[in-house]
Structure formats: structure tokens, C-alpha cells
Image (cartoon, rainbow, N blue to C red; front, side):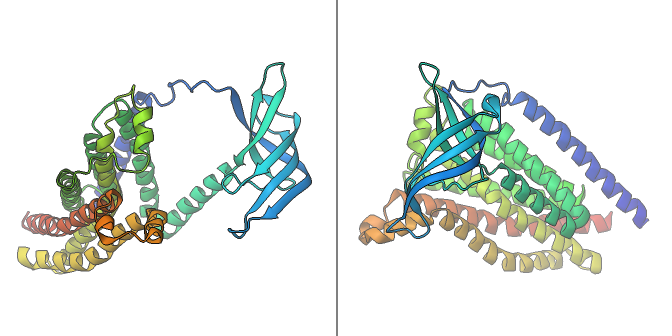
Length: 382
């Protein structure tokens, strides 16, 4: 009997994986991501190998340790693009904010412009990090699969699906003028359903987790929108909002909604962790003692949830604080008086992000515990 149950769960997972692959394919094809035209540029970015570094004129930055400023004169052989094989002399001017130190043998990126008269102008663009990025991702996936085994493999698939939905569904829809909040809700619903069922199978545990997660995410989104309205936070006070408005003048992007859409997506991960943890604990307790009733199972779920919510709300607050650490330090250095500090747009935005997400986590606990208890008891009676 257990073999048949395991086989049914595995078949359900593979069905979800198939649905995820088909949905990912449709989303990528219909996104228009690859058919869009690249903006006109009068330069190419290509890889180049440093053949030699000559006549360096560098000195240590007097304020920031480890930074060298000045000039380097490089001999560079292009290793990609239509200029592959050509050798150029490049002056690498290093300032505090444009600081790319070159050494012989390094692979770096350069811009190549063709000026009037057919002369080439080659300048430093930055470090070549593609190999590092792919290597780090491969290490992450390898560790996930080695430690998690089969469930680690499912986690890799679900993460890939989530990234595809965000990049190829949510972002293009927002750029085309679709409501960012609605796009974020759809993204959260689809990724939650696929991720939970892919990792845990199609069963009562997954259903309870999905129900609790969606309520938590909806609560976080609703509270953030209501708080923004009350505190007169439109989302235009966020970082790079001005640049977004300038870039989106002809696209119709709803910039004020981006803040709240971001809160929904940012809180999804933590809420998802809480939801599946509580649902799994309730069904695990039920499998050990099938005599427990609805009230006892709900109580067990709440006990686990109370332990989890303390650390997860901390995680969410610390994540938002960490992303704004530079800004927080600047605020402290300016020594603003309390009346200015408590009324800063930045403080209000960070509070809305952190607190609304944390409330979403808290409300996920009783909802998931109740749904899991109801489904577990119903399963026993059935």
C-alpha cells in the first residue's frame, strides 16, 4: 500500500514538473523578451585579455584602504566580437568610483567605438564576471542536490521556474502597463502552487500550505497598500523612482504600485517557509498519532508556528534593514533631530515593508495550522 502511495506522489510531482515546463515555455515565448530590439549604441562591449601593464601611475587612496587611483597603460588583445584578435593600447583611468585594477593575463571587458575617420577608441568597461556567476550558481545547485537529494533536485526546478515567471512574466507585464500589484499577486499564486506541490507532492499538506501562504501574502500586500495610503507613501519616494518615471514615460509603467508589488514578492519567500513548515508539522504529528482531533492538531501547528514566526519576522526585518544599511548609516551621520527622523519618507517606506511582511507571516500561522488540521482530520475520516 505504501508503495502505491509513494508512486502516486511521484506521479503527481512529475505532472507538476510537466505543467511547470509547459508554462515556462509559454511564458518565455509570449514575453517578447528576445524579440525586442536592442537600443541603438555606437559601441560594442567585448572581452579582452591583458597582454601587459606598462608605466603604472597609481597611488593608494588616502581615505579608503585597498583602493588604488591613477592610471594604467594596457596592451589588450580582444578575444570576442568582430574585433577578436586585434591588439589595442588602452589607458585605464582609475578613480574612487570607477576602479578596475588590471593585471597581466586577466580577462576583462572593454568598449570599442569606431570614431569618424575609422579610428578605434577602446576604454575599460569592467571585470568579466560571467564565469564566476555561473560557477557560483552551479555550486549552489550542486550543494542543494547533494544535501537535499531528490527534494533538492525538485527545489532546483522550482527555483528555476520562479525565476522564469518573475523575469519573463511579471517584469514584461509591468513594463507593458499591467498593474504591478496584480502581476505580483498572480506571480505569487502560480509560483507558490508550483513550488509547494513540486517539493511536497499533490496532497493535503501542500493544499493547506498553499492556502495559508496566499492569505499571508495577500495580508502583507493589503496592509502595505493601506499603510501607504494612510501615511501618504505613493511609492515615488523609493530609490530610483525618478529614473523609472523618466524611462517609463512612453510605456505606461505604474511606478507608484511598484513599492507594494515588491513587498508582495519580497515577503513571499519567508511566508512560504512558514506555511510549509507548519503544514508539514501538523501532518507529521497526525501520522504519529492518528487519534488526535482537530483541536489538538491545530494546537500543535500553532506551537510550531509561534516558534517559527519569531525568527522569520526577524529575518524579514533584517533583510530590509540590510538592503538599506548604507542609507541608515548616512542618516545616523547626519544626526537628524527626532522630528525629522521619524517623518522621513525612507523610514516610513522601510517600516511599511518590514512590518506588513511580518504581519503576513504572523497571519500565515493560524490559517495554515487550521487548514492543515482540517485536512488531516478529513483524511483520517475518509
